[in-house]
Image (cartoon, rainbow, N blue to C red; front, side):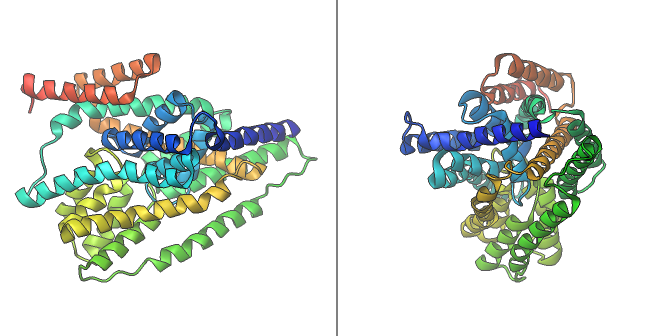
Length: 423
């Protein structure tokens, strides 16, 4: 046990160094670090196709492999932390990375630069949708890009798995979470349940091998932690729960503010909340309009939650689009600012570090589940399988910037539909 505690303390010291190094590095000024943040996340905002799992994979490629801002262990912890709070996980990860790299200006710059390109693209598409009554045809683009996205996610899972799976226990928990996810179990239940199960199993494992020892981790303490977290979250949820049925800019903003404060997970989770509020309760949208809006969020680069931009434009034009976007993303900035003081101490205590290990294993399993689902839609014939396998091999062997592979995939899509005459 002493050896394990020593390892934990060493990891904690390394993580603290990783957090403080950017602000104290003599080679880069605050302005230079902020410029790095702006350039990186603007580029990701224009090129990060494929949803949260792909976004996370591309961020890891940039900040861990290329720029060496932090270790894989630290990056995995940030994934776990952002999965614990509501909102779009990849956007919150971008915000957190900006904060760790350049402080409060970096927090704002990373989030705004990652969100704005997608918002502008969605605004143009929303205008075309309202003007012409249908979505632009983008099948030729997705055909070539999606297999590359599958490869990017697979490569990230491959590399992150070597960091997360340090023993059989975390691997077993991840497999269980993956199976339950594919069976349709709620993502939030799997995330917290996987963390709790891993913590309990580690506790039982320790009790079995060290019956004479005592440790600062117990099931009552675990329960109190979760109960305290939910009590903290409930006022936020209840405070934003009211919205008026008539369409007004204030009602629109409050509705999306509530969604940003309570929705966990991917665009598919957002779809359920949007349908309940906007179709069933408020009757602002039809089911077809909602599905079109979510489709826009899926195939455009950047955060899937820019679905809000599309819906806002449908309901109230340009002002509605801007207010809906602000409402759904604003809680993410607040949550990252609030959770950082707590998150920076999660590795200090053995029981919280254990729970975070469980969250990381569950999060990687959920990422794998997304990969399986995306693969079912993206890998439809021999050519798409070939694109995915070749991209995966190139990523493992040469580690190129994934943006070039995405562009190459788009070219493959163009050739398939224009030169070969696909339909």
